[in-house]
Amino acid sequence: MRAILQSSQPHRRLSLHRHLRFLSTSTSNPIPTPTPNESNPTPPAPTKSAIRAHLRRETDPDRALSFLSSLPSSASSSSYKNFVYFVSRRLSNSFRHEDAAKLLDSCIPHATAESDFASLLASYGYAYIPDRALSAFKARIADGSLTVSVLSFNALLSAFRRSGQFQQVPHLFTSLSEEYHISPNDVSYSILIKSLCLSRKVEDALVMLKLMREEKGINPTPAIYGIVLNSLYKINKFEEAELLWNEMVERTGCKPDDAAYNARICYRATRGETDKVLELIKEMETAGVKPNTFTYNFLMMCHFKNEHWEVAKTVYKQMLAKKVCAPNGATFRILLDGFSQSRDFKTGLRVFFESLKKNKMPDLTLVRTFVEGLVKDGKADQAKTVAAQVRKIVPAKSTDFWKQVEKDLGLSSDADKA
Image 1 (cartoon, rainbow, N blue to C red):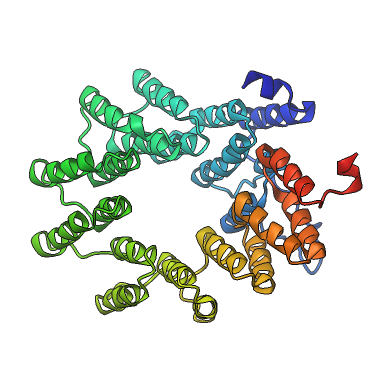
Image 2 (cartoon, rainbow, N blue to C red; image 1 turned 180 degrees about the horizontal axis):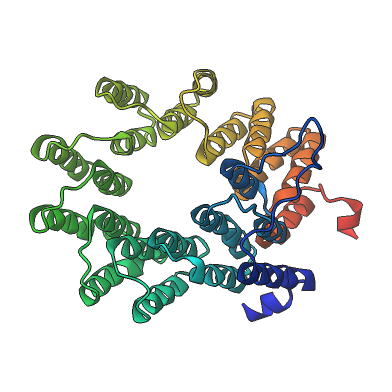
């Protein structure tokens, strides 16, 4: 890690140091705005949503840092901490984990409200450095500046789960709740149960589900049931999943939500059972639960699995036309994969560029398959166009991978070949 940081270009290290000085000496540094004139005497400050959208699109961590340093004084402390999450993740995605840690550490002293502190703890998880969150949590308790509550406790557990260290969550759940006399709530159990499921300990998750209901007196939410149902279906424990579904609906009276229904729909979709999928969607709507993006994704996936290419395309068009819900990253992965298989490169190209507009480009392995298909289909020019677009936005950690892809497919420029 140290070698990676030492190899960073000087302007990158300077960018972070400049930002840290800004945090310690200033509360605002307005974004440059158009010069006031008669038609625009007071240019409005960027809205929180505009700042968030900008940071989502910005893949270069140094430009993101620069933009973060120029936030206007109108940006609230709470909003600022949320924006830090995006920048810290950009740094970690570029293998600059220490820089991400320093950025988050620099914000801790300013997080006087527990909600802001909890937000930062969760951000350590997004930046893949949850151990720093644990250190910050314990330090705040030790110096007496934090009255321990379940909010910070949940944020800390979430940091470990989000960073992929879900095996640590059960231990932290038990040890910290006992040491600091914290009473876990339904959110705490949700994080614990999801971590157990991600660790492939579904049986333990079922035990914990029973414990929280029967011993702790906490009613599991539909979301918690959905987590366990999804895990049972994934390991083909259909009967156990259906029993749990019946328990949820009949014994506890818990009304299934979209996530619970989608767990059942996903199981059927992966098996290409179109009729069952449509039947479940109808049941879902009858129960007053609105199908969401994931529901449509699974339906399209099912049609692709059965090689119903045109039907899948129609579902996507209806999804957009009715504005039922917005496509997400999985939508574009499913579509690009499906149109690559059907060799419908015209539609595939349209989908690819739509994914770029929404900053949801599918993973590089899938894009490589699509570009390879273009080359084999005699569409070298289109393949070069796609490759060039990917090159502009590929994360730093994947640059070598994509250069090799272009070389293997004969798409490298003369400069690259040299």
